[in-house]
Amino acid sequence: MLLTIDVGNTHTVLGLFDGDEIVEHWRISTDARRTADELAVLLQGLMGMHPLLGMELGEGIEGISICSTVPSVLHELREVTRRYYGDVPAVLVEPGIKTGVPILMDNPKEVGADRIINAVAAVELFGGPAIVVDFGTATTFDAVSARGEYAGGVIAPGIEISVEALGVKGAQLRKIELARPRSVIGKNTVEAMQAGIVYGFAGQVDGVVRRMASELAEDPEDVTVIATGGLAPMVLGEASVIDEHEPWLTLIGLRLVFERNAPRL
Image (cartoon, rainbow, N blue to C red; front, side):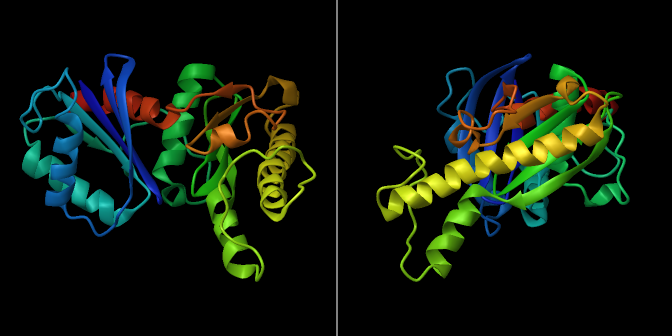
């Protein structure tokens, strides 16, 4: 079994693969204050409940693949793999790791590891040209060329950040549940805010993707648009440009990167 760990700014998603199939997944909050020992206990608690794994820490795990946008958490996870999974091959996505995706950026080291991993999975699953829209703490738009290169992208404030900002900065506004309203024209303040979030972000996705597609390919219709991230379902039914929804895109990319690097360990 392969354990994949995607550490985001807000949430950490873990996936367990049996071959090419993801058989279990978990989502926990990302806490930069957790130590390696605390993370090991958390992992043991989650995986100890799975019937395909043993009760002992690391039993049944044959490989680990990790990417992180939070450097302090990556540091602690590196210690977890060394101290608690010492005999298990581990791949941590960082400069020097073989991904198979050339990065056409002014400074490739600036690109978040999760965005490159998403590009790896997009190329494998759908080919290029493609655009990956990842709905996380930030909403990111990543372009993959027809030759499978990471061509660049767009970063915008995420859905939860926008909701929190409205609640903090609006004197008569408050935090609301992220849900689809009854109609675009809200009949109360909560529905009006929900409409602004859902339809506003759907319009943003449509507008940004169309502009990116026109730069990425001679025929924008050739570009496959893939949505991923925990908040993607909020706008899937409203954004007209999305072709595919793959909630485990990053975890699949981590599996692919592990397969391309594990033999060298």
